[in-house]
Length: 261
Length: 261
Image (cartoon, rainbow over all chains, first blue to last red):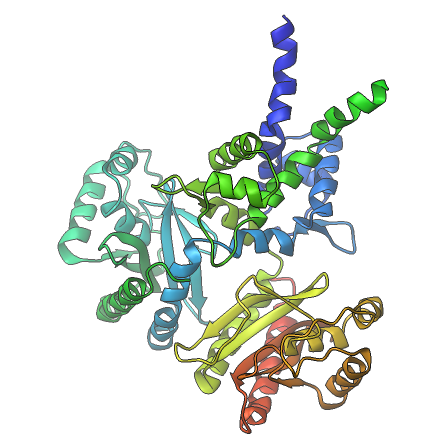
């Protein structure tokens, strides 16, 4: 009985629940909702308003959250600084950036760099033209592996246990072209290995084609996917050589700069 | 007496000290030291190894920190995701990016975008050529306001109380050209207003000249500084028109896209 009443205190002592709650608070924000009222944050993070309010005040005091002029709350510059300053994806992004720029100048539309994180692809960088075709990915945004060309490249070269887990489903449908059966997914992954890229016409959005190629580090490990999103028409496949060349450039930079920032 | 023994428990209950410690742990990492041993993190963040170890394990369980194959600890992709996904500086950075690319293609060397945070300029973005002149700024890096051209632009257009605080010193010296007296700083700030840009030859490093111009939002408020770092020679000033034109472009994008992501 004594143990039962002590347990929650012990959890707070280790910081476990405080950090969990802080993560839930940050999770309340989205790219489209960058400013939220305290009551809305409390609702989304499933916290009592008083608890959320106290924790938000503490996060504001550290600069991890900021309050706007209208008392709305937003993610603070200090939070971004702590996350970005020593980010290990920074060297990858820095090595890739000149090649992304060149590719963007040639291809137009969207050029992006994605890495595996958990069961998703997360996009570290994206360059977009103003008049580009639709694209659902965003910087720091995620997509399920089975729907995106970047996801397919990362899955094809990723750990076997991840591949088996994704093949076991569920494989949600986004458009009528989305891969939703393990048989089609297995065939698509073989195709990535065979041809060296993934080309998915209309799998995320009917009007757009995603094309992705693997980026290898100095040890020939696939560490990222370089991709373009172009209109879903017969010219899409003509972009493959430029993508493959750019990926080689990034790999060469990664090999040359291994261990440097 | 009872109150004295209860106080620390109350602090832990509110999460105050857990978050403070977590911030100190993230502060242990630097752009040059992205992977650290637990004992080194404990030392830098002034925590007992057992305390640091427990908190690091908790941060790892949330993906905010990651462990490398050699048990070294690094900042996690999830931390970057939480910070970047809904960052309010993202819209500024996105609006500026095409103009930074154009400027970088024309000027070469380093092109960067900085904003005011506390008493520093913090750099949101930087494009660098491989053979560029030396530059001490980094993405998510900070510089004191009085030494950098971006800092001077932001200080000239910033809150009066910030200006008085910086003028009250101390003004640390970086090179023999650095502004270290309030009189010179006041004159330099007037010059920024008079000529519309800051040009500082050799103030951060003797071989480099920083040139910065203000970026205004739709309400004509200065929200950022756009800058180039070029060699410290007689041609530096020729870059000013390209910078001014690019800053106007960013401002126009910010006005057009106000409220959008």
